[in-house]
Amino acid sequence: MNYLTKPQKTKNIPNGIPYIIGNELAERFSFYGMKCILIIFMTQYLINDNGIIEPLSDKEATKWYHLFTSAVYFTPIFGALLSDVFIGKYKTILILSIIYCFGHLTLAIDETRFGLIIGLSLISIGAGGIKPCVSAHVGDQFGKMNSIFLTKVFSWFYLSINLGAFVSTLLTPYLLHNYGPWLAFGIPGLLMFIATYIFWLGRHVFIHIPPQGLSFFKKILSRDSISSIMKLSIIYIFIAIFWSLFDQTGSTWVLQAENLNRNWLGIDWYSSQIQSINPIMILIFAPLFSYYLYPRLNKITKLTDLKKISLGLFLAVPSFIIIGLVEKCIELGFTPSIGWQVLAYIILTASEVLVSITCLEFSYTQAPNFMKSLIMSFFLLSVSLGNIFTVWVNDVMILNNISYGQSYYNFYAFLMFVTASIFLLVVKYYKPNYYINNEQ
Image (cartoon, rainbow, N blue to C red; front, side, top):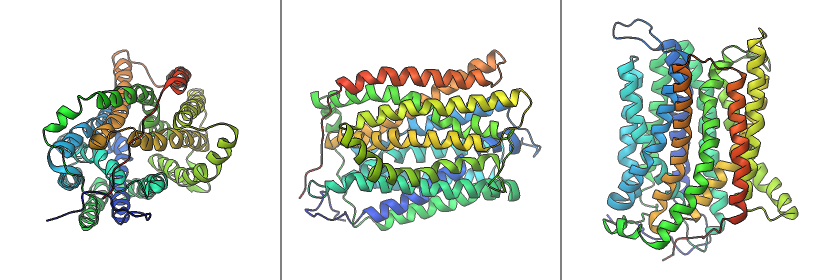
């Protein structure tokens, strides 16, 4: 079957974008709906082979949570190679999405440690493998004439992620507490099936950039390719520390929320539902920053992508200082309001918009046309590295029987401040190169 292989010469938004956005909305519902309840499932619902509750400790569950997150963001490099070298983005996304669906099914029908390992392994292959392909697939739809819409569409793309995340992080904790893991994991599985179907429907309007074949490996050894990878890797090392902090919103922050007064706005919240603050604030901040904050800051100084990222790294620091102060209050015997976590979420979300959305678009524009998926996988690898660091810290805590306390959160706040300060040198000396697809 013949597919479009180059962007059309048009000043309009590409026809494939609605299918990509719809797919991303449903897929992100499935992923975040599953992920937001993992820490509570592992510490309260996990059963043994005899059907008896046998949960993990807080530190063990945190370790396994971040190992899974690390795996999800490590496997993209294999998805990128499968896409760019062998079968292209469309087939890669479709095949791995099916594996993804089976991962959800396993979690829904087997609540033991064996089911947890198999289910999360399949999801890490599926969800991780498609990650660099989906985001690069967005950019593939554009040529030079309509590239002016790239920033706006990447914002829509990120908004769809967070709309799906917002709804699912409110719904699946309720389903877990009231109906059990089978339905709480089953509904995200159903949404992943819908996501796969929506993506399949768009096959005739997508731009299918052909795979490069084995010649790809020769191309990535070119001077331009190595330069792009090395230069971007410098940025990603700094971004990894940000992800080490950010992804704890699904682990240590949830565990902390179990000890807080969760009556907020007249509603009794489940501890894992508080994560919904992040996506709803992104829905507010992303357009606010794009259409209000950035234009005004540009009147004061030339606001480059690297300056946005730098500002975001510094902004992550106070969020962990707040969480540390909350932990100190808990240690003193108080029961602080969950509202303090909400404040920390708002600050960290503003940081995420500055760091993640900006770096996502920047990474695509810095990649030679034939290796955009691979470059995206390197960006995602920064998330994996950040989570591996968190795993290492928790291993040290387990070996030395150290409990979570204010000093734990202050350590991360200090680490982030040092990282952001050194990143200022990158802002000063980094020289970007931009690549956009050719049209037909």
